[in-house]
View 1 (tube, helix red, strand yellow):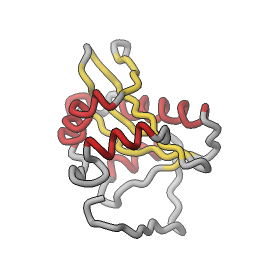
View 2: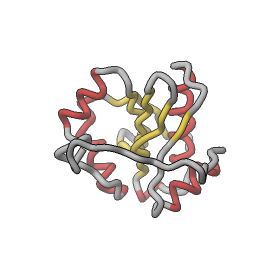
View 3: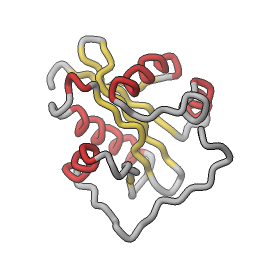
Length: 145
């Protein structure tokens, strides 16, 4: 949309980001990796860029672009339910791709929960392929991280 503005978000935007994640129905681990302290630490390490989409000064979308040095990752994509299906998700994916490509990332990936068919459709529309031969595994120190 013409009145959307892309912004780089900071630790000072944490409350607005969390409110948007909640409104969008993203699962949040407030005592773990999504805590204010963890969010600030991730920004300070320089491995993530948080991109926002504003309309009339209000945050309507957010995405976290992370770089592990080998691959770029698109994480925590959320769009305000009131503006879904208007291109905000596609715009955020494109902005994250630009950031990650500028950082030299030739591979960009996203992990999508199996029950999130809307996100899977969004990423497929943006040109992302599913790989049925890949499995996501993790080892965690705590369940809330």
